[in-house]
Amino acid sequence: MASSKKLQDGELPTNLEVFLKKTVRPGQIVLLGFSGGLDSCVLFDLLQRVQTTVGFRLQALHVNHGISPNAAEWERFCAEICAEADVQFQAARVSVPRDSGQGLEAAAREARYAVLLTQPVDAVVLAHHQDDQAETVLLQLLRGAGTKGLAAMPAMSERAEGRPILLRPLLGVSRGALEGYARSRNLRWIEDESNLDLAYDRNFLRHHILPELEKRFPACRVTLARSAAHLGESAILMDEVAREDAAHLVREGRLDLSGLRAFSMPRAKNLLRFWLAGHSPSLPSTRRLEEIYQQLINARPDAQIRIRLADGQVRRYRGEAWFEPQENGTAMLEITWRGEETLHLPGGCLTFSRQMGQGLSLARMASGRPIVRSRNGGERFRPDCRRPTRSLKHLLQEAGLPPWQRQNLPLLYLEEILVVVPGIGVACDFQAAGDEIGLIVTWQPG
Image 1: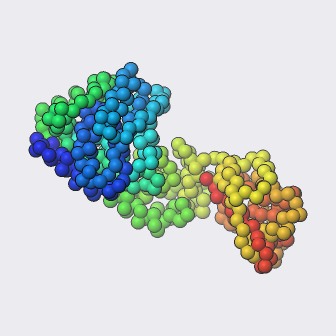
Image 2: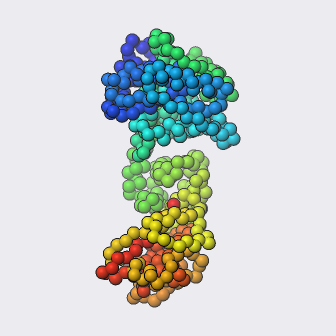
Image 3: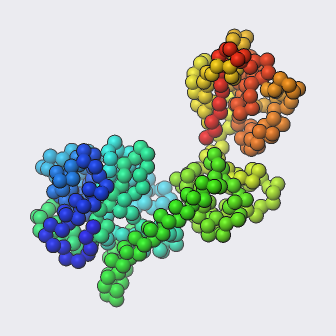
């Protein structure tokens, strides 16, 4: 939007209108994350001014973290402001853990976003501004962040299915300009006493470091925010390269390691990071990513690679990297199937569908009670009527099923007879004939 220079009357609403017309369609619901502070009160006023011309429906949500003794008063203030403007308001109270290991600030932010981004709206609008962006860049630099981290906060998030788009239309506006606007409009707002607490890293940068930098580099907030924008473009380009590489090297969620090995290390790690992001929201640190890369590429061919991450593990099998979301086994499993289309089991889902001339003969199922059991080892199976009965272990090896998935594979029995091994087939004597309906049993791990 606008720069940090002194704003002309009407410039902020005009720029906001232009921004929203590019990102929001008429009739859509726009939800303001409304804290009641200066920044969100300014954005609330601006959104009301452009609501009719852009054509969206404005709502506001206040997240009450319960941390400050004034939290209840802030919630009442926000409700009052919305009532005066006839804007639909809701408040959400969250519990912020103090022992999460990520710090109170980060835990509160995570709880806030979890609420905002699960609302049934089209867009969530936040009042982050240029000074916030500069502070975020410095924080990320001090944490040793990579390109995406140094890009700080985007003005518009990528669209994700089932979630509202996240908009930050004030990133080009300084806090001083927002304060000038608020005073010219006689706006009311609350002051959060925690903004003065130097125990928080952001406050330390805001009150001590940035003022000192400005003495020597007066435009430092502008230039830091500009650098974030440049790095944001670089991050987008890196994702585009990774997406093109993944189109050639990722099949059914597995990463081809021979192709990864042919890349330069920066390009290979970029693809590896992109691949992991597709499986897990918790990305490993730079050092951990380096370890994963080295183990996948350099470990001896017969090594059993098993790299544990926050919510899963990376494995290697037959020249491919696999991501396993969690270690859920089906030990001691024994469940009678009663005609459900889906059975949710530890480690995945077992689905049942009907198809003419394929799968398990429904007529033969009358010969016994259908039971889903876990593997015990030593099972023998004959899915091909032209070949003799063989060990299930060898059949699973031939099918390319990784060792760690074999034990978790559920089996379908009729009483004590093994009749279906998902992914392998149906026992010879129980296969549906061409003129009868059969049962298709599919295992979906994860």
